[in-house]
Amino acid sequence: MNIRGLWWKILGPIIFLYVLIGGMTIPLKSGITYTSPSTAKGGASISMQVTGYNTHFKSASQNKAWLKADSTHYIQAKSLVFNDEMNATIQFDIPSIMPSTDTVQPLTLIIDNEIDGAFVQPNAIFVTFKDSNSVNNAQWQSLEDGLLHRNTSMTFPYRNILNETIRNTFFHVALWFAMFILLIIGLYHAIQYLRTGKYDHDIQSAAINKVAIMYGVFGLITGSVWAKFTWDTFWTTDVKLNMTAVAMLIYLAYLVLRGSSTDTDRRAKLSSSYSIFAFLALIPLVFVIPRLTDSLHPGNGGNPALGGEDLDNTLRMFFYPSIIALVLMGMWMSQLKIRFERLQERIFQNQK
Amino acid sequence: MNIIKVKDILLKELSIEFRQKFALGGIFLFAATVVFIIYKSFNNINAREWTILLWIIMLFAGLNAVVKSFLQEKKETYLYYYTLFDPVDLIVAKLLYNFIFLLCLFVIILLFMTVFSGFPVKLPILFFSGSVLGILGIAIVFTFVSVISATDNTNATLMSILALPLVLPIVMLLLKISAVSVRLLSDTAVNEDVMLLAGVNSILLGAMLLLFPSLWRS
Image (cartoon, rainbow over all chains, first blue to last red; front, side, top):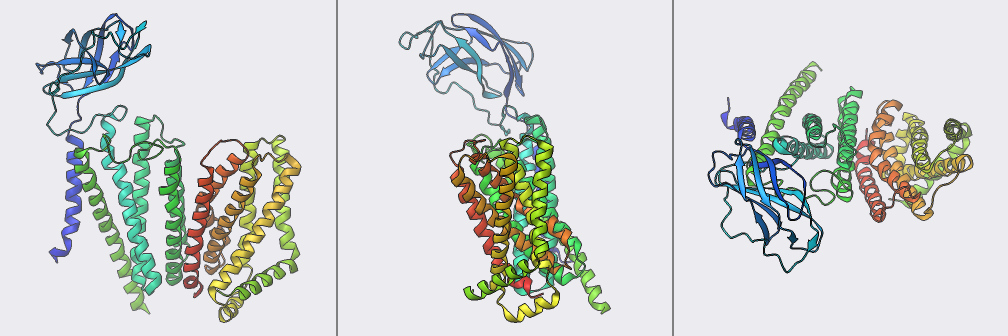
């Protein structure tokens, strides 16, 4: 047993286990899932029902709440009543004069305490003002510096709509990345086969491509389930989905091609040419067209890609290791297939 | 690449084609029949259906047409070619031949479609430039796939299995360009799509020219 050659086989599952445990157990940041009422008139006194998520209203002692119009105009809550950790009733006196010249102004709700840190619900309430005056706005106050708390414990970002499914980033997105890395390795071997004519390269190329196709199917399934929870449908007309469907069809045709011939030399030549051709046809599909058209996916049609609040540093701590782990495990899986094929080839050679 | 050789092979292909008029006529008849069936079953075709049907008919008629170009010849002929020509010359000639053939097919289908269900195109320059580029792309993919399936025991089913998914990206771009040209969509970035189509074509063409010599040896 050569232990030095085995390190990556052990490393892959260990990293993946780390991703599974960490990715599934670390809590989300606090957020607000529900507020009521959604509209109010200027000058009214309202009591707002708020349902939080992962909040600690009762345990925290320094709860505060504001409604924010813009960066210098805030209303502080008159009183806060907490029914339990998650539910609160907050009283606001809304001024009758608003700071900007619009007659309808969306206000953002900010809640802060020392356990959860500060969290917001954008456009929590729409206020209609009879009168607007940008000069006389004494009822509005600004927020002093250092008033908000910061949550220092390790948490994943809370995003509206995504909620807990943000953890799927480690699997769905990482699967696509791993698939592409594996396809590129497979492509390298296909090119090497055509250059050198060594049958071993074809074995490797085919085995790696097969694992990549499997990852692709998993990526589609995880994405489909994710879409069901966030976009409320298993399949949308989103351009990226359709392009990946085409990509999967192209690679399934690759499997058909490999299955169609029993002559190994010919099969090797055809399928490595086809896989190079297919990969080249894939580049505009997956990288260019989605960038040009609108898409629900991040990184397309003006949505931010891997950045901003969608992928913060705590997510990165699991996202990148997940890609590495999936690539390593994919290489291991293809390695089993490669060894099997090599043995088969050796038996075949001995028969002759 | 030798232009004269390419021209010779191309002329040879064309003359063979015109010698067997029944095959040629068969494909055009196929196109005409399909257009007529669609006209009878739809009665009134709107612009959206028009573009989609045009390309679907084009795709399947073209598939039928190109299958022959490599499958019609015998193994011995190939061996003969192998001693005569440079593989790049041969594949370029085949590609040109398929391209011309598909263009003729396109014109004929377009003619039938116009006769039976009108011509809804509002931006003809965009429509025709997009179509010619798209047909070139289809020709490249079909030629490449026919090479693959021809070397593999002349298997015509394999051809359609391999060609249809590969041609999908081109067809999707084509459908979008056609949709813009009949004013179904208004898209200011449609020039980018045309450029993209040209880019895809050149990538695929380069890949085919690089890969064909090694396929050819078998």
